[in-house]
Image (cartoon, rainbow, N blue to C red; front, side, top):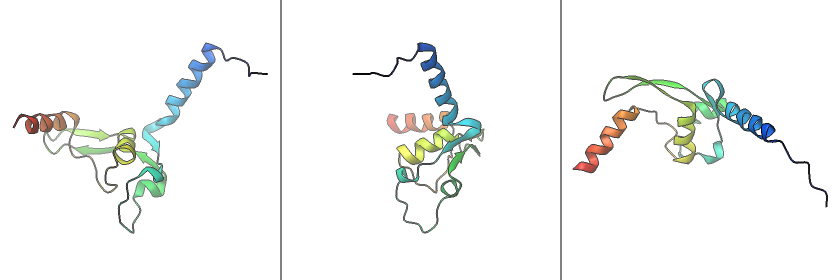
Length: 106
């Protein structure tokens, strides 16, 4: 049996670094439309038409702090958590955490 030659540890490290860079370069992440939750609309979201998510600025509704909803956060929200495709971020991380604490405490 012939096995492929073993890769050096340095080759593996370089390959994993390249994968990290490709996943979300320049504030963009590729859309996988098959993983999106069904939305029941005739219109297609802009990020699906374009083919990638991009970083979006928003202002937290609780603390009025300017934040960025990153492309990787959007990818997680829409494809993994199955969030509605026509929603946008409204609270920063600290604002969301304070809401969770107040709801669990009451």
